[in-house]
Image (cartoon, rainbow, N blue to C red; front, side, top):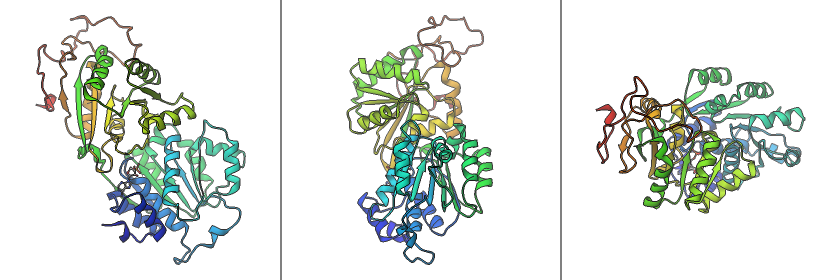
Length: 430
Ligand code: AMP
């Protein structure tokens, strides 16, 4: 199928062609006709599937189409209150969605704006006053505007809840409900979520009216384009191992995931000291620092970007070749989100996880979720020691003495000394 077959306005088709796309992704093929037809939509799709264009394009089409396909005189009205509201969980995603609206809407008379916290509210107020058609917002800042009466949501025609699962994880459910209560009853609703948990189902049933369901299997779980590997090692060896990998593999643009903000900072410092230009990106960094780090990374000024899960959500970097899980996430779904940063739009990508003894449970949960075992690789000199003792979550690094054999009753031995030095494929399951 080609974009030209979807019935989108010529201006939109032109913008798509300028991006170099001619074939819609599976989510676009399914979502665009449903949204154009005015249906509510429940889409199970993660970032990397092309979902943003999947909702942006038909929304823009609808905004410039009158009831019978005539041109829409509302576009020429003077004081524009937003007609489309897109809620996103993070600032980064808000910025990226609004960028997409601008890219795809560049040949149309459409104004868009992203509002999010962590930056001054006054410029946002000034922009809202000037008139906005498509408003992209994070929930907290949107409610600030509501409270200050600097935004009017009474003319919203289309409401998009993006990354709904992450919204719930981040505790935004009450804010979302408050916002929904402010919207006109008559509207089109689109909901996107990477997972379809009972909580998401419940939210969807309250929000959506007879929705069309679109389910795009998380592409990365079937590893069509992402090579997934695990290096089993010891916690104490991870930093050195990571530096070794950078040195020996000539990596140039690597997104590294750490579990905590503190851990991300420490790791970025270590890499930097080792001559690998790095920055950390997490929720405690100012918006300016986050945006700068991301653009330096995109521009190739940084070799590594060390991120926490929340900060990395929605980061859209074309052709990101490597994702490293310096630590595995506690929530297995986050693994799928993380590796979704690479291997996008058909590009090859590699996701490498450094797994120490006490993360074996996390690894098992991940393999259960993705329904496959991940290939194990052993790097000589960095093997997991036979006597590693698992320990609970994250005491400060270096606070623990090297494990002593026999100290932890009931602890299983990770791997026999002198074990295989070559690739082992899913050995745990053999
Ligand atoms: P998203 O899932 O919206 O974050 O999009 C992931 C990436 O795919 C973005 O870099 C888009 O620019 C790109 N993309 C979107 N639609 C297409 C398409 N039809 N063909 C190729 N790449 C696309």
